[in-house]
Image (cartoon, rainbow, N blue to C red; front, side, top):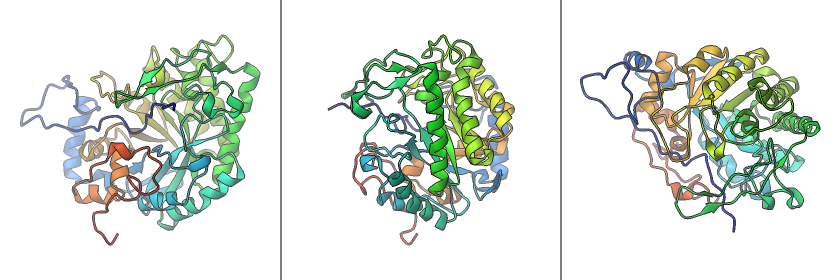
Length: 415
């Protein structure tokens, strides 16, 4: 049985360690310290102390009025049997919904070639669209705002997941080498991909357009284009993967062309105020590194302004690989300054650092993954500074409709 690497929930959680009464030099940086530039971190920490819970403050994201800054990050859970969302997802998402809270649904395939993991949902068929509707309705009944993350894995796949056993598609014909999973036992095997021909690329762009249209039909408030974590869009963006010689390869402008064509198509289809994108320029997930990630991130942040999209969702530089949080001299601040819309950060945040990021202006919103998975009432727990449930990594990707999915307790049993 082929076992694939799962990226979304396997990075060790961030934990801030107090440094004592003396502040380190403004240039000091240690593994485990804040990802924020030191001057911003300390200033933001002081502001956060004055405004005790910056994460629980209102924010206007375009036409959407948010009551707090705590976002449910998109988390693959592998409980969509046959690529169709299931009724148990109604409870899962409604548990995590709150009035004025932003939820981003798990990565959702745009076509039958988009899959790379078992039991992940799609949104390319009528059956899938209809199955999403009661899930979206349940979130809206709680007053939540719900975006669907639309996704194509590209070469992060194998013949077993592809129609008629064909090769996965990508920007390249270079395969990902076998990788040992985080458990140190299972090995992920990937098939050699087929490089997309230039004339085929508009067809994939159109798959994203149709997926966005379908998401709106299903009732979603908008879509997040998944351009991160080594998947298809990232395979075009990153120069350590993209070895094309046509107009989609080579220069930074060319490598970003595919992503921006998708953004343009989706904006034209559903409107800019309903569109966000997730990027991870510093990450090298699935062997998708880049020689100049800051230049890549800045180029995209500036280029996206042309389309007026709702938000840019970026992964912190410290999250380079699965299971690793490393010391880096980088931050997302240049991209934050360049992008004119809502700026969402993600990557091992806890309550304190999230409050600091908001109070300092480093970010508008903070997305949480595993903490939200294990604490369906996470915004309330942050507001009260209440204890958090511990997540169980062993249940992240099992196909059980309850265990590790909807059985995490609320702070109060009557919620």
